[in-house]
Image 1 (spheres, rainbow, N blue to C red):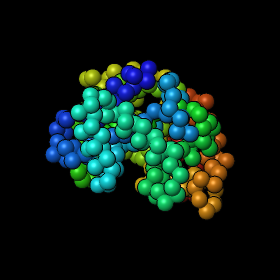
Image 2 (cartoon, one colour):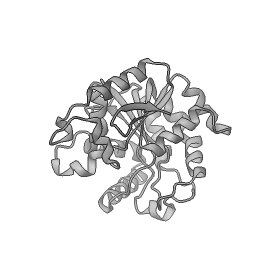
Image 3 (cartoon, rainbow, N blue to C red):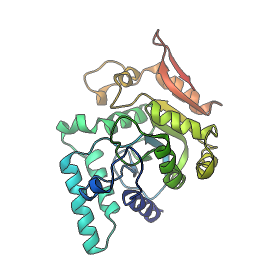
Image 4 (cartoon, one colour):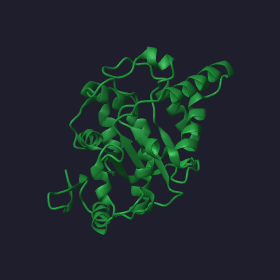
Length: 265
């Protein structure tokens, strides 16, 4: 199974399709590649089994020059030595995002740290495998990510990505990722993307405020100095548990004006 996953990751990071409003081939030659696809336990241990939960953002944030240069060196070496660049990059992501001990990286890594904390607080265990993916695997060039680009990337990769999720929960980070996945779930799109719809039939789509792009995300938790030491609010946890056990197939975990927690389409 893991070899199939590595093969899928290689296809994604090597994609050179020219889509609108995302980075092009020139940037990729400098190491700014499509990303992030990760499959590992929340403790950072690699696993040869499918994920209990799938986590999807809308697309990766801006890569820093050092990061892009690192990817470029891995690609160059892989080309010379004929091995999988994705396998090396996947090992790097796991090492940096889940096993890193450098607390100075907290701001840079809060996308993963905050989401991991949310997952642990709603009942996942450290050794549970989680798949981290994107709707679009390329960086956007500006604030607008076109519908055509989202659909194209989902048609090309999402069906194969979802195959690596055994559990029944898809967690979407932010409204844009949630709305796109919900629209797949309700059958808004036609064509090849309908393959994804079939594979989502037994899965629930839960949207939450973006863990690194929205201050409202922190309202899910009780007061505290650091997100890693804070506990989730009981009413938030109860709503998520009811959603997972209930009949709703999709919803966004939000707050009303009086701070009441609700899950609404």
